[in-house]
Image (cartoon, rainbow, N blue to C red; front, side, top):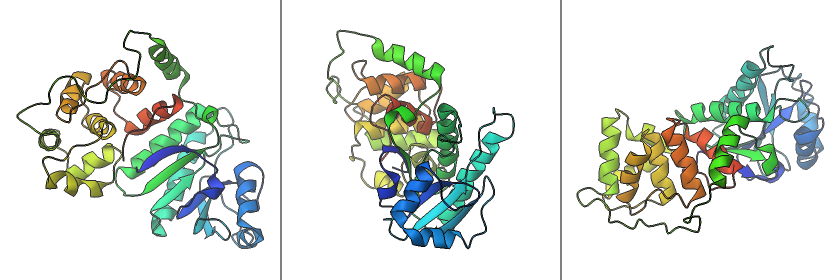
Amino acid sequence: MPLQIVLHDITTMNVDAIVNAANESLLGGGGVDGAIHRAAGPDLLKECRTLGGCPTGQAKTTKGYRLNARYVIHTVGPIWRGGGRGERDLLVSAYRSSLSLALAHDCRTVAFPLISSGAYGYPRDQALKTAVDTIGDFLLSHDMTVYLVIFDRAACCIDSGLFDRLSGLMDVQTEQDRPAPDRASRPAQPDESFSQMLLRKIGEAGMTGAQCCRKANFSSELFPSLCSDVRRQPSKSAAMAFAVALELSPEEADVLLRTAGFSLSPASRSDRIVSFFLAHHSYNIFELNAALFAFGQDQLGG
């Protein structure tokens, strides 16, 4: 999927480029910076010495050396000083500068750490939202696979108010709180297949197929295959991703899912989270996926 949050060691990611949360000297440091330098070997530091440092919010590129990645994109995030000194703008710039360099170097896959959320003290929930929003905005107009690499699940902190509301939703115990069948108990819509309904709704929404795919956290390259076979059936996750992209209500989403033989189920934790976002007219799939990740659920997209 174009944006995926993963639990992983960023130094072992097999991608075109990994992003290093560096300091302005670019000469190594602690945390992710130190780990990347150790894994890449001494030649990385030698090349970094030739770059003349890097201002906060900007990025520079080196080779990957001993890493699985071809490139290391070094970017400098802001130190948190309370939020009133342009920290968010600088953090957005760090992500955008890194993505622009990845694009310029024809990178198809890029792995980011959660920039500034460690020793620089940026609140993790705000750091995550800025990362997800900025990367997500970029992916709405570019085909690239981006991994946001988290070292442990506790480091993935969504907004505390949202977390509390979703926690309450997760704590609801019903007689249906058991593994739910994927397939809907009622038959699918007889007059339209999933692909037919999807294409109709894309047209009604005034979007192109490529735009809808990207909003659903898919590559735009998926769209031709959706059009090629009206009998094509998606996974439940893919169907829900398109429901979010089309900004459907929970009831409308359930109708779309039923054309593929699924339904939104109160017995499913992930379905509850998706329904919550749809009911509250919150259609940013990248923020939804951050919430799903925080609660240990599979992310939407493909």
